[in-house]
Length: 94
Image 1 (cartoon, rainbow, N blue to C red):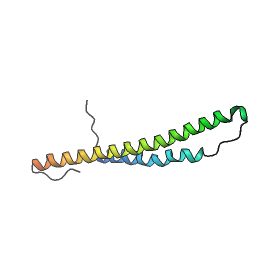
Image 2 (image 1 turned 45 degrees about the vertical axis):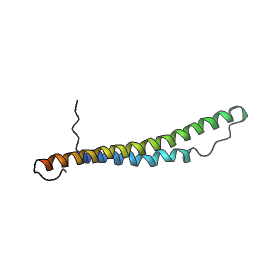
Image 3 (image 1 turned 180 degrees about the horizontal axis):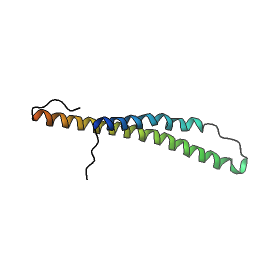
Image 4 (image 1 turned 120 degrees about the vertical axis):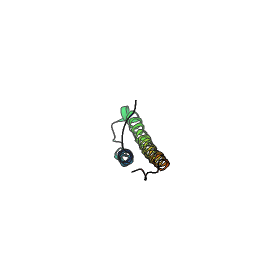
């Protein structure tokens, strides 16, 4: 199976992923305050919100890593295309 996708589109995907990092980082800030719900549920609510804050931090880290990895794939494709074209006496890859 092969997928044809220009490197410029792959860079676009990487930038979209990197842009989503900020949204994921905002999760913790939006869940910063724990409402008072009473002693019977307070611990459960605090645990629930902390787990979601942690998930937001993990998601931000994964999106950043994935964006960097996708950009590295595009870099690799451009480098490979450039070396193949140069070997055949053509110009650079676009």
